[in-house]
Length: 244
Image 1 (cartoon, rainbow, N blue to C red):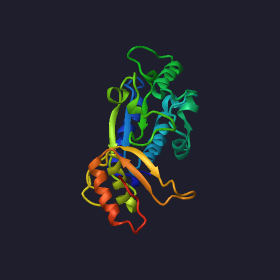
Image 2: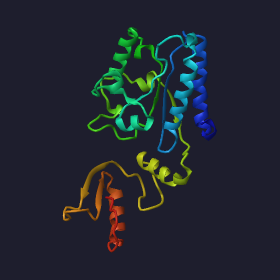
Image 3: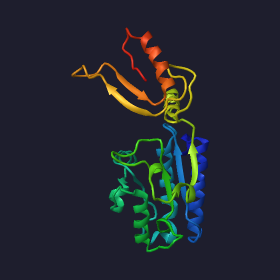
Image 4: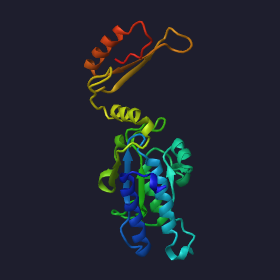
């Protein structure tokens, strides 16, 4: 599995592996708290699977594997992610609800390990979190970065590593465009010139009973809308996607 990794993935993999080796030699070392992020196609899932396999192999050697303790555990915040990783959701694993996922996880791990205190987080359990803040939240869920009354765990407790190299070379242009769009980045080519802005409304053609001919996506950027309107007027004779 390692031969297909990029240098970014390898750096993170060996960083976690080195911590596992030190943990096996001395169980009193500090916890590992690492947040791995990256855009579409950068290999986050593949890296996590490799880390999980290696960490399980190393940490299960503690006490000659005579203990029944769970050394490593992988779970996901949504059903879709759990299906991709062949694991269970955090809600199912720890029997928690999604009103404040990370706060509930902190509380539950503290209960499980019987370790509490003002300076103890997640029961002193090491965590490698993998995800992308730009992705859509669960249905009716609140994005982590919009949560209120919650300690900023990401900045205060977690180290940060980002994957930037797209591994899906056959679709590299598509994923590069997708990442530019989600970051609201400026573009000098194509029908869009300038930042998109935020989507304020999606309008379907209400005159059709079956499939719609076009969809209008309205942004809060007026300059962007005027530019697209000019393009659409040129392309009236063709079926187009009009972005306002």
